Image (cartoon, rainbow, N blue to C red; front, side, top):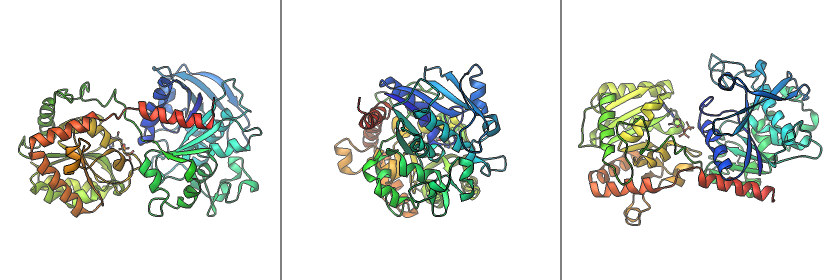
Length: 483
Ligand code: ADP
């Protein structure tokens, strides 16, 4: 099975969210499962710097639209997965975030930048590819490569079967109608079954309409996006494609997120030797300046601070959480009002609340290990990684029943504890009252050391690796291109 994996992000070089992590880990897991892969990604400065010896394997002078000529370079990642870097300095040689300029506003030519990525992906997956290596499957991700399945249909004789994975439906790649010709498209493409979307041009809509198969990153999110509340305007189209839409849960990188080997922790621990976790808690309390209390649970948060994550509700109940009693450690950045609210909370309760505004990979690991519970009451969550890190670290997460959170966390009900399935705490609605009530219940369970150990062991027994998800993707590929 040959797969061309087209992505606009790849960790550790270019990452703004879950897609970057998936693009780093899933190809490796697919190769381990027997697939042959090429990862196509823009030649952003960090990637050009990481692979200075990348060799040119193709050149594209005329692709139809308003694009400059560009080159395709080949490089090898240390794990042997070949990268194809789309080298076009006019479009990709820019500092900072892949999508935003220095003012924090989208680059004005993002349609050209990701239109080119989509166009080249389609060409390489088509019978018109200049290369001998031809994929069976073109696997695209989010709006940035969603135009590729549409372009692929325009090539005579077609080519690979296409799969489009939705990591977050909120970003739809919507541009004014005037960009149509710059993307090498014309009047024939401007209709409801083409690229038109309520008078604008949407990359994502075109991909959702034309990819042979659609996936998203959890089974529950796959159902939710077909509803009016979660479909972000695309629910009608997604309903018509329900038969081709599946949810495949993400995995986590277990080489990086494993409490038994994590070098960032004060003491390693595993499911059979949980004592090291108390050392991690004390070290975390000391690092962030909290009192070294052992008599109350420590709740942790590592997150973008946005309404999506429900953390405004956590800040609303901050005083009541402290009163449980409990401690709270927060790491995150984003919404300025929310940053200020958490800072105020820490100023009011310095012994019980510690807030770090910023992005800090090492502290994120120490919170996952040192906290007793992890708070993630998202309003929507396509998959979520942090709750899986928490489970792997024996830090039961408190989540809202949505998307991937609903698919990974089993509520600590008496029945769930008795049958060994409970691994965290689930509240049904994202309201301050319910989150607080659930936190109170969690604090009660925490105080019962025997029950708590059991819950931690249940959490740590789960398999959160990429092995299972990679098999499911392979099955999907095979259903589209039987051998
Ligand atoms: P999303 O992609 O919606 O932001 P996920 O839970 O899927 O949420 O993934 C978030 C990733 O970013 C995780 O790897 C998490 O640890 C990391 N992260 C988020 N905020 C921070 C931060 N302030 N410092 C360190 N890591 C962070």
